[in-house]
Length: 118
Length: 110
Image 1 (cartoon, rainbow over the protein chains, first blue to last red):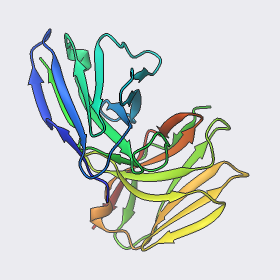
Image 2 (cartoon, rainbow over the protein chains, first blue to last red; image 1 turned 60 degrees about the vertical axis):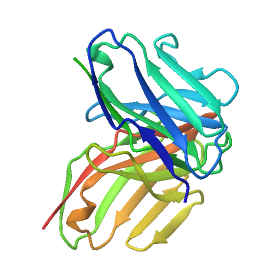
Image 3 (cartoon, chains in turn purple, green; image 1 turned 135 degrees about the vertical axis):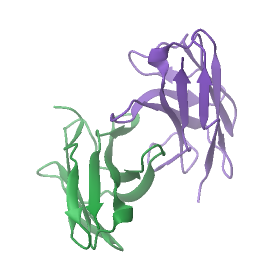
Image 4 (tube, rainbow over the protein chains, first blue to last red; image 1 turned 90 degrees about the horizontal axis):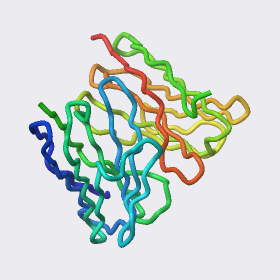
């Protein structure tokens, strides 16, 4: 089946620094990837939709200048948390449709990246 | 009403029993639904998808969809301690990809 690789799995950083998280589709091409965030005991909340070759689409309330998304190729999307603060500490999970396209259908999730900002 | 609602639990069942997990959804969510299982500290993994009214069975899992009542459920037969996890109900809303409920924490007691 489809595999999505996400890296790093854990990152600890100081307040004010930037952190980059990578998401790769290993055996399929994904024109669209989705970035979710999950706080403890909360559900997954969609942050943004990453579109290959064009700008990401951000959900309401998500600062696009703080959470930079780049989808430079058909297999790689990156999320950069800029000037991280302790309230950005969360579990960030990327996903891609198994068909690789923009249809929502079944999503394959990466393993997630736990960010802790000190 | 939130788009997808679940009782957060915890739901505790003895080993071997049937665990019943329930989810309701609003008019804004379309007719495609998914159940994901999420272990603590891990990302979700797909258990079942259901698109049509009625039951869909896969091994020990049965998903049930009732469009008239806007209700979708997941039954786990012969529950095992390894089934202890948070179960997330998800649906599709408009052009947005999956919208998740808060999840129900299931604990299977050996």
